[in-house]
Length: 347
Image 1 (tube, rainbow, N blue to C red):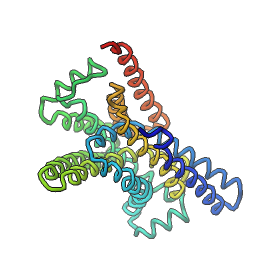
Image 2: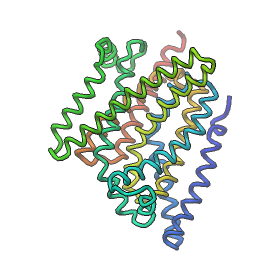
Image 3: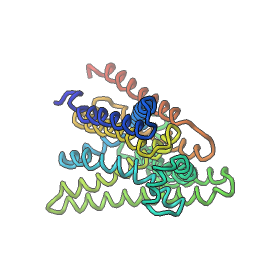
Image 4: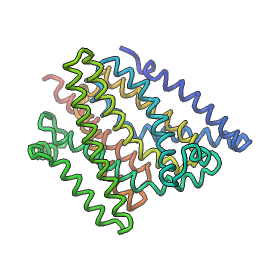
């Protein structure tokens, strides 16, 4: 069994290199030592922001990852981190600007480098659609967990037992998400209703499509010669889309600290590396099995995050608040797990 330090070797290396690169970037932009120090500190804060917002992501990823082969677990840590950093922290914000400003990809890169304030404004203008898409997707992720009739353990029993029983009604989770979408659509100004509903519908469709694709690939893989590879591919795709949905909040929130796309990529990339390593550590150490309610806390945190993302279309809710609430729920589930372990130690 590897020690915690061994799991964190690559994140530590990436942290050192990333912070050095951030300081160099700050010096290049400002030409001063204070500018270099400012970029250094912002990168460190962004890394902490990413970790705090994505710890529940690590727990959910671990739940899926434990069913995958060691080969696909390694690919998730290697290929997945490339997709997470360059796909969500660089390519995704560029695509938002390309669509919003109707300019080419290279022009979007130049805009990010030469006019970061305007670039950040374009990202902010797309926040409504991003929040609607991510909120509906993540709400379905959480509700499908609680509506699963095969779930045998309940943490908040008075709620979770009733949700599990409601899972016998086909399509209940999709219906609840649609109701939430309709409620927020009515509350939003008329000019924003169409954009919100359109993006939210795409979030639902994307979840259903990824879930169906995962089942098809897993089923195909179990019958084919490369069973482990095919089954792993379905889970891999699901995890990448899930990670993307979690990343929306962090990427948008990062622009409150800096408008520099490259600095955002460095800071959030450092945090993403820690999340990936924590995921693998949770799988290999069997932490989810050891702490009975930790997974429940993660999914409650996801459900809260999805509601917050919807609410952010109407009110300004700081990302720090979201991170603290999620961390508090997971912390309570951890303490409940410890209490249950002590009371059942002799069982």
